[in-house]
Length: 197
Image 1 (tube, rainbow, N blue to C red):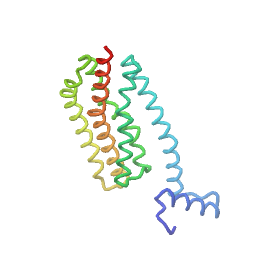
Image 2 (spheres, helix red, strand yellow):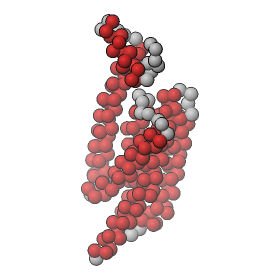
Image 3 (tube, rainbow, N blue to C red):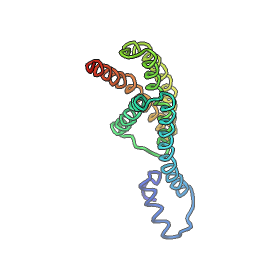
Image 4 (cartoon, rainbow, N blue to C red):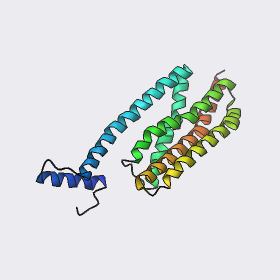
C-alpha cells in the first residue's frame, strides 16, 4: 500500500481496492478492520448499557430522580470536557482509546456520587463542609487513579499510551466537574429554595 494502512481511512480504502481483486482476501489488515468495526459497534453498545445500568443503580441508591440526575451531571460534563481536551491536544478516538470510554463511565461517576452522599448525610446548606472534607478524599482517589492510568500513558506501544492518556483526561475532567460544578449546582439549589421560603 502507498499509505499507512494502520490508519482507519487508509485501511478501508486498501480493503476496498484489494477486495476488487479477490473477495476472499484475508490477512492482518483485514482482521484489524473487522476488529475496528466490532469495537465501534460493541463499544457503543457497552457505553449505552453502562449508562443505563448506572442510572438504575443510582435511582435505587438515592431513591430520588432529582439526586440521580444531579449525580449524572459531572459524568456527562466531564465526558464532554474530555472530548474537548482530546480535540485540543489533537488526539483522535481510535481502536485502543475507544475501549477507555466504558471504563471512564464506571470510574467517572464515583466522585459525584460520594459528594452527593455526603451532602445527603450532612443536610441542606452543607456543601461547604462537604467540599472541605469529601473534596479532599475524591481529590486523593482521582489523583491515584490518574497516576495509575498515567503510567499506561508512558508505554512505548502507541495504542496503550493513547488509552492511558484518554483515561487520565477522562478521570481528571470528571473530578473537576464533581469538585466544582456539582457543589455549585447544589448550593444554587439550596439558595433558590431559601428564597422561596
